[in-house]
Image 1 (cartoon, rainbow, N blue to C red):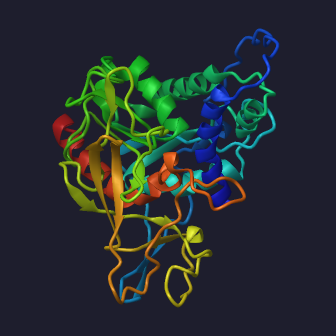
Image 2 (cartoon, rainbow, N blue to C red):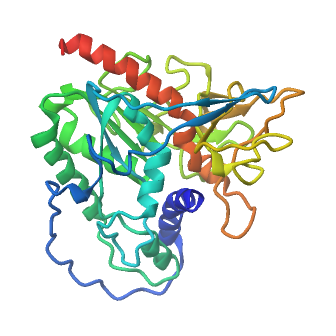
Length: 396
């Protein structure tokens, strides 16, 4: 299930962009949308994750650590029972609902992406993740086939705005908060920050914004002034009130000329902040790879010969490094592999978006499927340091 969820997340934006370029017969004007019906975010069923309950975030995050010599150990995850800060997450496009906008029913797709991208932040913060009526993969595919569905693109944003306002009104109580998103979720959060947070009183409570798998716009050589007017990019683990934004590509497969990420527009460039080395340069990736996404196929095939893996995640210390690259190809994180002779681990990861039913890689997507997995350990560590800096500054 997790593989299908991540592929749907990546392919959805590709289909959306392709639909705009497709040469199809003119469609009849869509009927005027009905008045928006708002969700009641006081209802616990409208949330994937909330504190102090058993829900989509109350899942096993244990990892099997595999060193180059094949030694294996179990890293047991433990959530903080009383974290001092909050995290607010907007998930990427994963819904296969039949309508143009998803329902508010929590299904396996939403649960799986929370497992991969958000639950581990429970080591540092209380977890809040609203459901929202995103444009579905079904609608995107229909647009590609020349049969557009009447999707309401503003509905997703309106839902997240309502959830954010409900959180602020009844849950936040002056606490610091980290915003976390990926792909479509990053896009929705970028709009929310620009409209509702940037330059507003609540900005002082924003510890950081983690925007994965996106192209946050900034002026060349500057940290602020593009998508955000007063929220700069992060350059140190303890810096607060800043944004971390990136898209991952293999070092030997940079963004092509026409790429979904890493490109600027209207005189801007895409932001690249490397969680493995916020201050610049290269850093070791503290990745948590989904055990079932082994490049060799199957949760037992992370080593040669295969050795059983029984945890949801795998860690491969020393295998990968990351560095921001700023060149003619774009602004992106380049991921390099460092398997040495004698390393019994598979010297690769599965994270490329491929043409369905083939092994043809869509290079314009880079490693979009695993943006969160690659940096998860680094990001959780950064949130911990940011939390301490925020608490020290505010005296909480």
